[in-house]
Image 1 (cartoon, rainbow, N blue to C red):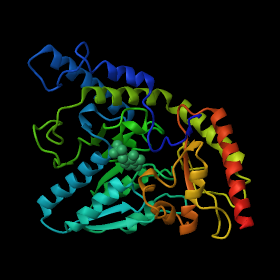
Image 2 (image 1 turned 180 degrees about the vertical axis):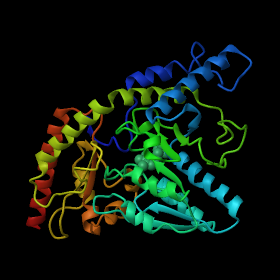
Image 3 (image 1 turned 135 degrees about the horizontal axis):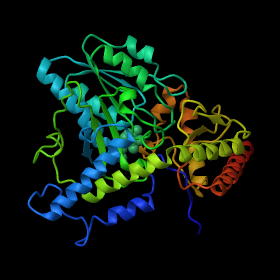
Amino acid sequence: MRKPVYLDYAATTPVAPEVAAQMQSCLTLDGCFANPASRSHLYGWQAEEKVEEARLQVANLINADSREIVWTSGATESNNLALKGIAETYRQQHKNGGHILVSSIEHKAVLDVVAWLEGQGFSVTRLAPDSRGVVDPQTLESNVRADTFLVSVMHVNNELGSINDIAAISRITRAREIILHCDAAQSAGKIAIDVNKLGVDLLSLSAHKFYGPKGIGALYVRRAGDIKVASQIHGGGHERNMRSGTLPTHQCTGMGAAAELAQQYLNSDAQRIGQLREQLWNGIADLPNIRRNTAKESSISGILNLAFAVNETQGCDGETLLLSLRALAISSGSACNSASMSPSYVLKAIGLSDAQAQASLRISIGRYTTAEEIEFSINEIRTVVNQLQKNRVNT
Ligand SMILES: *Cc1c(COP(=O)(O)O)cnc(C)c1O
């Protein structure tokens, strides 16, 4: 059987072959396998050099200083460290109160953290986005309170691909000395990031969203200003006391190499992938009752979220659609929700009904997608949707 066409790059990407080769050189006895914190021998020094080279590569991707990069296990941990770390520092200084502002369509790795902080006595406001999935800076500004100390808004949404205007949001937070965190797991390596232009204080990254390995990420922590992130993992004082644990040289090297490649391919990848997305859309846009949930403008090139029903009597539900589209590896809503049957909170937040949200699919295109695969996918989707709608008419 032919393997399904992989169109789930927003869930994770394969490791680039160039990256895998780099990682391979950091594993075995003849390679750079040592503990980067070993200060007493050549093996350790070489491993440290590898890790620091990779730190610089990651810093370069976002125009940061390498001293502003803290290694983590991924964006989930980066988000936890940023939000809990800042909240803990705030609590030490203010004893009680404290307000956190987030968008309502953040990844669960932010929403579940702020819900936990709410349980610890902080107050939280969750802002609904507009119909494109973009947070309106003015709405955000009008929700700022005197005790707001932290704002967290994602750069790019993982279900829709919508891009937030982080620079506009930082002008609001800067003027009030509010700390701004940004989950950039979906934007890094897809669109240019300059932490200084964005004006963020903290920014989360994940290697496996840009052709690096799973299990490694980073948190950018601005050096200027008074950003104090309280450590959430204790034991050894690595990473300037913010995150303890032996650094995985092969993982760090993998993320560094992936960051450098992503920067190299940034424009050409985005342009080619954007063309493939429009090829796909043009091939299915005439299907009855189809709705494009991802706006053409203000979105990254690789994500196309689609609803296949406008009302409950027409169209078909997402689970049936997914089951029938076995030739394509895609996800319903977001991968993190696909274990549950509840409709995506992101799609509901942009105004879709339960039925529309349930009949939605996220197709995500990446570096290794070909025009032939897109043609094949168009034919598959057309055949399946037409068949399902015919069945529905007949029953
Ligand atoms: C994938 C993703 C995460 C989680 O990243 P991990 O490295 O897998 O922990 C967080 N936020 C967003 C927006 C993501 O897309």
